[in-house]
Image 1 (tube, rainbow, N blue to C red):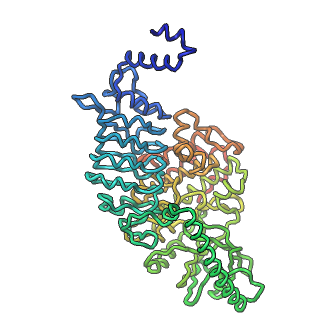
Image 2 (cartoon, rainbow, N blue to C red):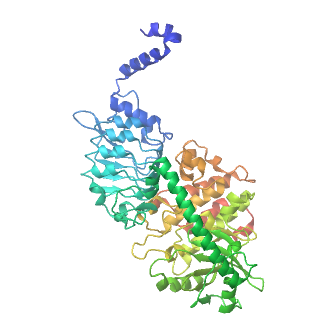
Image 3 (cartoon, rainbow, N blue to C red):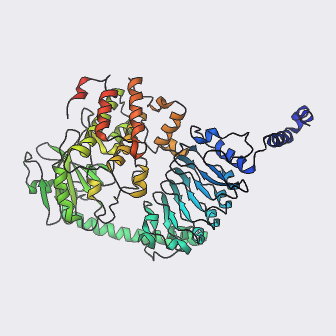
Length: 590
C-alpha cells in the first residue's frame, strides 16, 4: 500500500500523508495520551528541561519524567512540571487527557492563552499555572471542571473579567487569580462569593464586595456588567441619542463653568495669566529643610511653590508629579507632589521623611526637605540635569556606549547596596526601575524614590501601592504575596541590568506579542546559547568578557530568591569581574 501511495502522491498527496501518519502511529503504538503530550512538547520552544527526554517511540508516556499514570488503566493522571525551564505555549491537545487530575506547570516561562480545551478534562482536581506569562482571558470552559478543588493562575498577564461560570465549581476550596490585569465586577455567584481579598489582589481594575471596592458607584454585590458594557449593548439609535443628549448638556455646563471660572481668574490674577496654579498650599503649611546650607525661609519657598504651573512639570510616575523649582538665587530643585495619601498619612509622614532626609550617599538622590500642608505633600530633591535613565534609553535616544552603561549599572548597584546594608535603618526600595534611576550632568547614576513605597504603604496589609504598577520589574514572589525583601529588590535590579544592556523596556511590545517579558527573552536566548544577542545594537565598545560576566550576574539576580546574591556581593562582582576594562575612577570608594 505504501508503494501505491508513493506512486500517486502528486494526485492524492493529502490521503497519502494521512495513510503514512496512520502507518507510523501503528508502528509506534503510542497511546492517545502520549500523542497529546507530544503535541504539548512540540509547542515548547525550550527543550532543556525534563521533556527533552520524552521519546516518541515509547508505547506509552507513563515513564516520562513529570508524567504519572493510573496503575490499572495506564491513562495519564498527573502532569507535574513546575520550575522546569519550559518556554512556549500550551497545546490545546492537553484537553484530550480525559483522565488528568493534576496540571502543575507553575513557575515556568509559558505564554499565550490558557486553552479553553482544558475544560474537557472533567476529572481535573488541581490546576497550578501561576508565575508564568499567560495572556488573554480566563476560559469560561473551566467552569465545566466539576471536580476542581484548587486553581492558582496568579502572577500572569491575564486580562478581561472573571467568568461567572467558575462559581459553579462547588468543590473549589483554593482559588487565586491575584497579580494579573483582570477587570470588572467580581462575580458573587456560587463559590466565588466565598474567597478572601487575597485571591483577587493586584488586579487594579477589579471591583466587588470581596475586595471592598464598589463597582461604578453601585452595590458591589451586583453581577450586572459595568456601565460601559451596558452602553455597548444598547440599540444603535438609542446610543446615538444618549450620546448626543449627554454631549449637549455637557457642553452647556462646560461653557457655564468656563465663564464662571474665567471671570474668577481674571479678577484674581489679571488677564495675562493664562494657566491655573499647579500647587495649592492654603493655610497651615510647614516647610522643613534637612540641610542648613540653603538660605530660604518658609515664606520664600511657599512663594515659589505657588508660582508653579503645568509648564514646570518635568515628570510623572507612580508616586506623583515632578516639577522643576528654580529659586531666585539660581539654585534649582525637583519638587515631587505626592497625589496619593492613605488614611493616617500625616501620622508617620514627617517621621519617615526625617529618616529619608538623613540618608545621604553619593549614589542616592538627595532629599533636601518637604512641605506639609492640609492639601499638599511636597518633597524637595536635588535637581539632576541628566533626567531619568528611562528617558535616556527610550525617549531621547541617547547614544550610551558600553563604558557609560557599565558606569550607570555600577552606580545604581552601589546606591541600592547602601540602602540595603549601610544606612540605618535599612531601606528596601520596592520600585527599582529605569525611571527611578536619575542621571547627573556626567551621566552618573543616582537612585531616587527610595523609601516612598513604604511611605505610601497600607499599614494594615503591608502591601504597597505599586505591587501591580511596574510589571516586568517585580519578582514573582512579590507579585503573589506583596511582601518585599532585599531579594525582591535584587530581582528588579537584575531586570534593570537587562534593560540597560538591551535598550528595551522589560515589557517591550516585541516581547508581549510573544507572551514574554525581558526575562523570558533572556531565558530563551540562553537555551540557544545566543545570550550575547541581548546587547543593544547601537551600543559601541562592548567587551565580550565583561558582557559574559555581567550576564552571569544578571542571571543570578533574576533566579530563585535563594540563589540571588545580596547587593553588596553584586557590587563586588561588578567591580572584580565586569569593570576591569573600564577607567580606574570607577573604583573610587563610596
